[in-house]
Image (cartoon, rainbow, N blue to C red; front, top):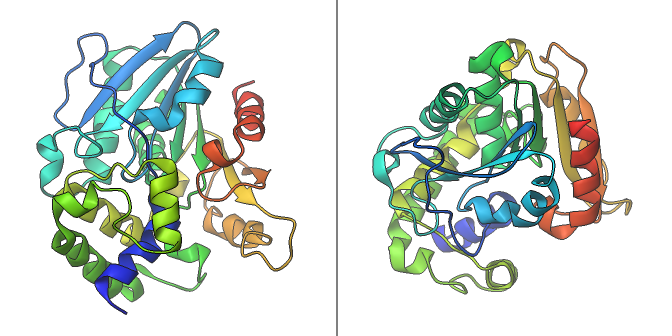
Length: 290
């Protein structure tokens, strides 16, 4: 399989997009890895986007919540038009999670709810594992503590590392211009990116993020997560759909949690749950925040 085709397939599974990025830092907080915009007043909700997304992926949900919640919209540097900053080199998920946790503590947030989509779900789990009682609850949106387990329950990081290494190099090979232009893919990949406003970002950050989504295994940290966890995910009642029996793969992936796992299947949604089925997703979020 060529690197170009491989990346198109991986994008369909893992990459999200948005139309822009919040540029303003919140309340004097400064970070060389994340940007946070704050809206509303009330209980705190932190929203973390996925790979190649900025905070605008949460625009509709933020509009729904900010009348009675304080919404903290996170964007990762190196995604969209944000300069890469410290994310340009080295690990991504762990350091970003550390900055999110530093933000929570610096702003004095009290047991905030944290919602993370795709790669942002990995960040949210890491925040909860490292933050202990600092974090109130977690919602993981169409993500797993080890993504390959959704395709093969017996897979290990060692199994997928060679493929992830090829994907990493392929993203670097494509270059920044190709990664910021909707329509560089063909067929289904082109439809996804042009229809949703493919934004891309810094190729170094995108490559590292994709590599970590494919290889990072958070299952061994689940026992450190004190906060209750909800997983919202796209679901189909059609038996021929790969999403029909996704619960069968999700439950074992989260087996190490202390508290019982809550599942929120969102019928008719694919990976971009909040965009595919916004009303159903918002209803699930409101149940989660009660």
